[in-house]
View 1 (cartoon, rainbow, N blue to C red):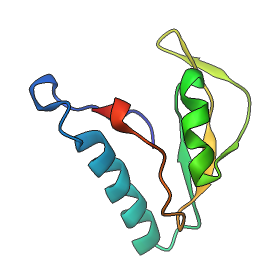
View 2: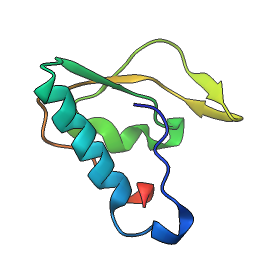
View 3: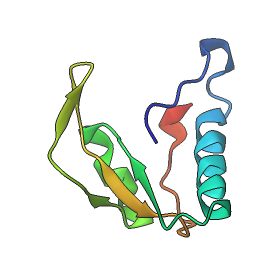
View 4: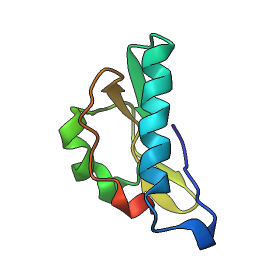
Length: 85
């Protein structure tokens, strides 16, 4: 999973979280064991609920440090992603 964008006039309606949950459902339906995510480094603490583990080095994207994470596709405990709007 990379960036998830919501058109500005549709933000703050929980669409980012709904999209993320849907992507996890698709991963389970496709029988994928893991999901990879690329959150901003400042948001890593939010991913402890889904037992995400860092993969590889910190990298820059659009001038912002990110860390790739791996999380079990079966894990239903998604972090609080309300910041995704």
